[in-house]
Length: 565
Image (cartoon, rainbow, N blue to C red; front, top):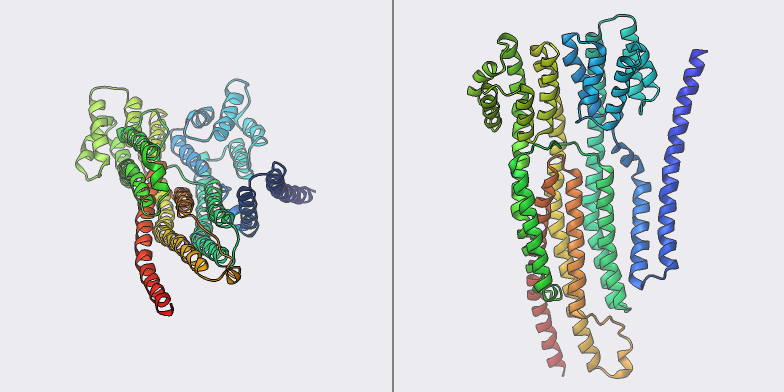
């Protein structure tokens, strides 16, 4: 009977998952159809209803084609917070505290997601204030778990405590099992991410080729300027929407903590960002109009905006590199510190010998911590400031787990080893993710430059040939002029449309890089700055080389016309 119930329960989960997926797809389709219908009902201007329709169709096809890959980019079954909680419990349980204290420590740790904190707080309240036994509290709260993995973990823990088995050994086995699942799922997600990023990089070039063909066909087969306008803005909007889709679906790890105590460099980054934004807006408001409406001077505006955000970007990359270095040295430090503290139960005296070792940028913060400890400041406050000043989320969590172990009489040597091994495993996974991102980053810089170069080639070609064909039509008899249906393209409008499309493509590629970056959230400033500078340089280079090519073509064409006359 129990086997039948189990199969029915599994069938229910599968059915609910499929219903949920169909429901999500149905909601997406309803939203897309509503956008299309709404655009037609309110009679949007001619280019914009086509832009909305084209963007919607492109995104719909992408969602359908890559739905299986996108599902793999959703949060993992075994989340990072869960493996941290297991490491937390393994470390503190070495001191044999009451079970209610174990759950209270997890519930009060503000770096865990709210759903985990609420769950463990409920267990603590049931044990401490309502008189439930630990097994009963775990069993009751497991029914409210938000995932099957957490539910089964709590139920197994309830059974282990009820029969009086070794909780420490159970947590060790549970940690090894779930972390193995987490590692497998993480690597699978990286493989899916590699496919998605490769597709995006390919589409960057494909979009520009589509735009080039669209614009050239419109030029030589006749039509209206709205064809070029719709093509440029529509393709740029589709790429921007695709990058936002990437940003929404890719789950990024947290490199920086969210504590109130933060590194001073973050303040400098914010000041530089505000200054760069103010400089860019001022330049656009004062001189932007004349720059945007000119194919020759628009690159100056792009390079200026890129240079305005470059100081903030450089500070952000410096901050990111510092956290990477701190994270690399912290597992070595916490392992050694745990061993020293187990022999000499004095935090300041145990820390002093470690200051001699090579610990990179971490040593500066350890010296500050040592100075506070020898001045008899509360160790919890000292290490809280230490974690805050490093800016690292890994350091914050590792120090918090270590201090909980110390305050609850745990085995500090074992805690240092557990935290060190746990963080080293996470760092190795992050390096794999970082390797994928670095490949995508270098590819995107090349593809972005090539895309902007091709775009400027085509727009300059359209303007020049439009002028040439218009002049040619005026020189032939009227009865033959009707054979040439061409678009008369004002150079100022093409320059404006090209500049707008370049800005949109640059922002789209910056968002895509931010989505794939496992590092600092401020690194987007660096991506925007580099891409904007690349846009300006390639924009200018495209204009320059096209002027040289066209001058030779026009010179030859003029010679032929003079010879024929």
